[in-house]
Length: 177
Image (cartoon, rainbow, N blue to C red):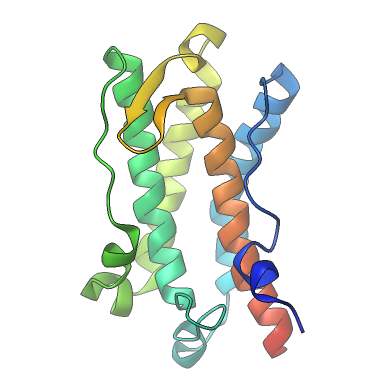
């Protein structure tokens, strides 16, 4: 039986790199490119009842996790665009928990969010592959976290996709689905 910390952080908590090497950058971009397919595999053939199963006690359902990934990664992509086109823009955070309780996150077909992630990640990966190192050093200002360089946000969202996909994969393992 896994403890609550393992259920919450199946791949461990996010540990930002001190610096980002060219090899790490390529690996992180590859992880973003792979996420839509890995997530699609993680939810393949799940029944409606299985999609309504929380990945841990008190956690979101599988359906909510999939919709959260689309919502969150859309925000991340826009933050990249703002930081690339404005001088340290202050971004607007959002209440992830309240978004997860909206009707589209509780009842929407996961196919829609999977399609969003596929298109979004294709565009995001294209952008990331064309950026020069100085552009990845650009920052946005998060009201709660302070100034965030894009290279750190790249690392965060590569982790974020793996983190939530692991929630679903581990649930499937535990439930023997």
